Amino acid sequence: MDFSRVAISAHRIATDCDNHAARTSRCVAKDRSPWRLETCHRTKQRAGQVFRYAIASGRAEHDITADLRDALTPTKTQHFAAITEPRRVGELLRAIDSYPGQPSTAYALRLAPHVFVRPGELRFAKWSEFDFDSSQWRIPAEKMKMDDYHLVPLSKQVIGILQELRSFTGTGRYLFPSLRTRERPISDVTLNAALRRLGFSSD
Image (cartoon, rainbow, N blue to C red):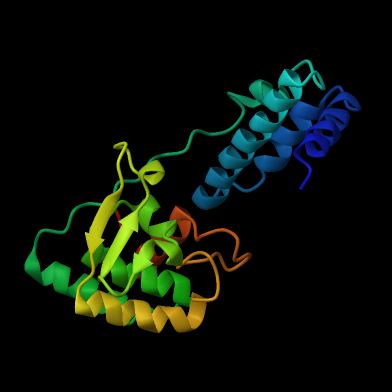
């Protein structure tokens, strides 16, 4: 994708219509369901990056996404409650094992309790980061909040799960590719929706 052409095209669309921001606001506000609203905010963020690039390169004078700052309903951050009761932990693990969804989502849920990494680190995991001979997952420094790589030891159970997963996604870059394109991992919305589907939410 030619990023400069995208920026130019976006600028032309904006300048061809004086009320472009209002039209965009109406469009993204049609569906206010939580996951769609989050997508709207992410789309606005990405569009803002394009316009700021266009401004920096002399192709635009104004970032129209700034006009939408107060037009979108703020998203509510959901924090899933920690499960501390052994009985509930068992219920969650059994529910995960029987999850009927897509392989990427199902295996991400199965691995999460074993590797204890942040959701973003799990979602963006790449096959190239895994060393099956030494049973280690080496997370690059650029993915960590600390300026150093992180080694995650892999148990025999985790190795078994990864071997199963490799038959589904092993030819691609990501362990858990998106259903729409293998060039991107699944989203955090996908994992949260799966947990809600299993009956585990922030309540």
